[in-house]
Length: 249
Image (cartoon, rainbow, N blue to C red; front, side, top):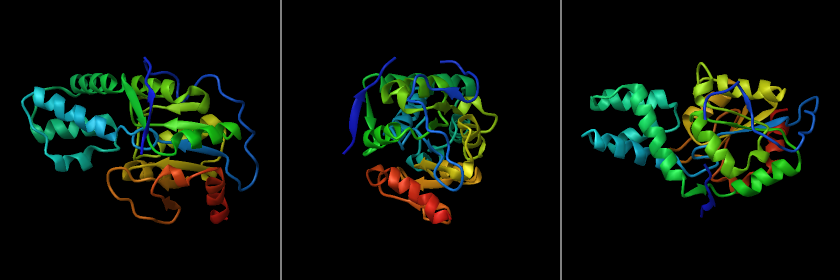
């Protein structure tokens, strides 16, 4: 079961961006322990992967095109430029990429203005990480205007900083967003746990050298070296995340 929290009502800024007032993080421990937790947003913390597809279907319907449901797995989890570009090419729609980006972001914001559905286990996990002062970052392929709205609902106090997809030269599946988050927190990427829900995000975390926890949302993700697959965040806690570093040793 998912829970919901009220959604509240951004322009790109410095990379990475501090998330606002937050508990002073514990100094990263030297050695092999967990130093930080880096969290994806859509489909990992908030149950919004379906929102994006619904908006894409509506926008293209208004342009006179029907999206093939099989394309959903192509566009999920990636940067908007890739997803929107694919859909323009696949449909032949008469719209530019910047124009489509605005329509998609507007449609998504309208959907989260009412209530924002959380993935199971999110509230407990964020509270535990905050309580133990574990450095935490939100790392998303979504644009700054979107993640700022979501962070207002989740609680900025839970995040030391955030990295948006429109603030990095290369976003997921490239490692740049996670490397930027680790640098911003002053931690070793190899001592970070990345939590992701798509193959694109998992690839980014692994390319950055992080230990990855995959919580598949739309398509299955197979276990692999340096990657742990779980059914839900309900089974993930601080002890679990620290254990990833123990297993690595």
